[in-house]
Image (cartoon, rainbow, N blue to C red):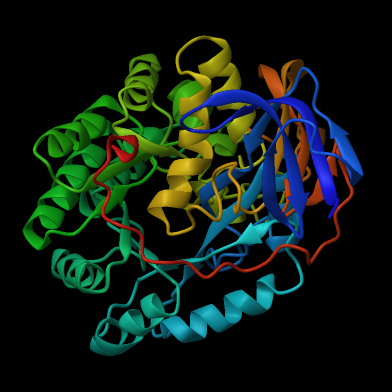
Length: 472
């Protein structure tokens, strides 16, 4: 039987190997790896190109409630479109439970927003903000069994932060159900204390956002989250780590045999706190939490990637328009950094930044790039081996990569719903030239060719505890 598609003459890289062969695809699956595979309806010539597993971004925010008068720039249509242009074939957005809402109510809303809108495949993390007895005792265990096998808790933000007791109760349910628990680790009371002091002194410009969330605030919360996970004996993922102190807390926990994983993001490799100190309100474009730090912190994050302290590299795509009263230039945001919508876009630039700054500059090898951007995400969040690798039986989620293409990042390449990219003007080497989801081309050489609605929702399995070194 002929193949639907053959990808020929490329160099294939997985998290473990690099080799040359052709890929035969039928009915959305990889069904053959070899040479001289014969006929196909479509032949894709990948000469002088890398052929990689499609990127999996396990930390993105789409269509998330963001406070009175604030509207997130990306829904599922524009967010997944931008993901595809950046070489991603699966994204895992967060479904936010608002106070007084059940998790199932939040999921119904989120599924309704996503249905028929996605260009790439999606799965949802649950954000637990109101851990009532019903939520923890009934809803959450049932939802984990239904394939929602990861959840996130916050240690900061008004209306999101859980108390220490609530953190422990939620961790206990994660342990009992086998769910993966993600933690945003920053000390809420310390941030409020510093923010009040700064505002009283008249220090309200965007750059003081970074001052209000210094490294000790993140390091302390990371240590506390790890201590709680040790007490409960539950695996946790500390997300968007920005500095050496927090990274070393995770490394020490791993050296002691604890089930602690870490994640970092592009903003902590190429931005610094100086970006928040731009004229007028331009600095608000870079307001995210934790904030970008300094050059030494960038180096620490590279060490975390190189030494496998960090298992995954995600974007934390959290987009708001800049020139918009419902975005970064919200009226209250002009009065104080406290009210500037918190987050930056980045789903389309995650892979090019890590490839250029990591692989091209010799900081990490190609196989580590694949592990950090695809394979480890699939393993940790219950999608492997369907996703995250190039192997017979896996979904044909593939990105063809030009390792020598030089690109200056600009917003017109991003195709999201925001009106800027924080990486404007950054020169990168290496760029995705074709994105394929389950055997169907979605983006071809900078042109969207896939139809909205092709992306599917993914139910997930419970992943095993992260015992092997590739997830450390």
